[in-house]
Image 1 (cartoon, rainbow, N blue to C red):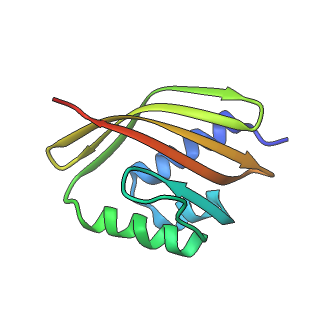
Image 2: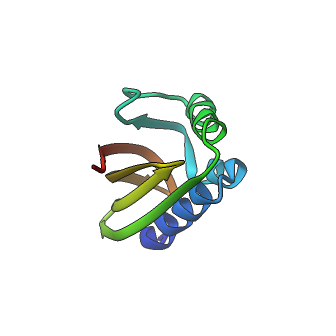
Length: 112
């Protein structure tokens, strides 16, 4: 059985490093992303294109966990995402199956 906490931390490290190839390793082929910009974006290739646009659209990016919670095949990350000078506080709810992310729902709030 995969260690969901370790997988979640690895996903975060890949995102923070803007390592799209490593990030792709964490996503199942049918991965589905929902965040304030997209609803149920799938498949994996379209999600990676979306993330590539996010990476390329910002000179600086930082993705830092405040906490990671795990329950069964789900993990929740409370995080701070900094895109250039724009800071967001958020929560990602991730589902996992066989060591791969099957979905991620992101909830973001701009910091004032």
